[in-house]
Image (cartoon, rainbow, N blue to C red; front, side, top):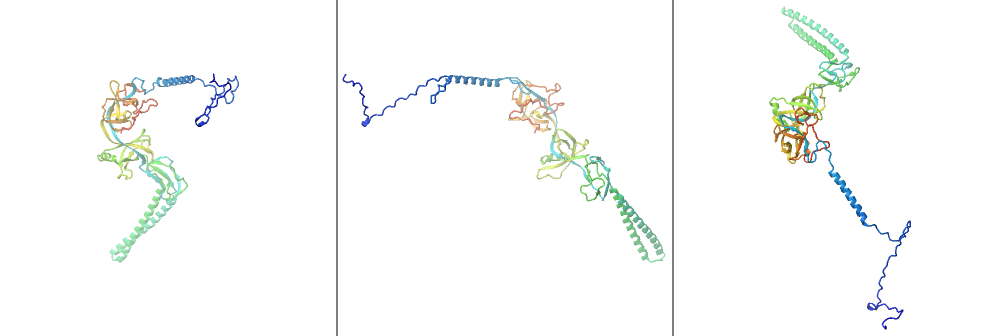
Length: 465
């Protein structure tokens, strides 16, 4: 009992190190309790926020969103694709268009760009001065050589002609008189009645009179020629251009524009250039007296305008371009060629006999090189590498890799692969039993589905080179 402190006794603080009182311990600070707010009453400022909802609700919404997105992606990837022309049904054969390899002759041609050039283009000018009193042509008219074109006032030249004829008559009379005197002097000289010098002088007088008469005759012919020049005719056959001067104007020989321009249209020529590398083959054929055919096409190269032949080759190569000029001549019966028109020229140099010919649409290019898809009897395809020869744009010769009678794919090859199963589709409007690319069908016709493009590493070209 003695050890218990008396009531009301407060113990002194313990003595710390070095006799200093210890630091009092920090009292625990607790936030005041927050009472729930009444409905419609705002919580007091400075109070703690209400407790957050459980994370279980947010996790549930996240799971629902993931399920919905997964369902949409699965539907997009696995929905049934519509069957379109040129596309294969999943798991089924690929519909394709085919053609049979033909055996025939393939022309070897040289393509070039040329300009239509008339063989004759004449500017009709007056050859004497005078008033233009009549115009005898219509603009754009076709005229023949010798047709009347214009008339210059002939009256001044008619008067000059009459004056020259009068002078000619006068001098002709003087010549006749001198000739009579010469005969008389010759008789007297024979009779030794006059001196020989008198006769010789008369001989000179007669010669002078003859010269005067010749000059007068030339003056008469000059005036007659002027009358011919006053009546202007067409020097060549061709088409008349726009009239440069109207009737009533005074025309002179120094007028540079002339009266009108006449351009010859039948026949007409085309001047074109070819690389000098093609010159040896062309010269070999021309030296053998072979006629090289030439065909003119429009700017797009699809419509044939006229057929003709090579006329001549220039005598030198242009060192700046490495090309040589050639001229082809065309009859232009239907006036399809117009001067200064740009055309595509196909020069037929030679013909490759008995070669395999396929449509250009069948040629594919990719990793194997130049190849085609060969259709086997079991309706599967295999890649066949080929070597190409000359081409006409729509058809190409195959010098190695194919035999006549084999069937190749022409349409739908962009989604094929080696060993793929195919189904031959007959194009709409094609007679039964006829393969695409055979005679009777428009060459190069495609049956490709809408929006279908060549596959990677493949490209269809019309040129077989």
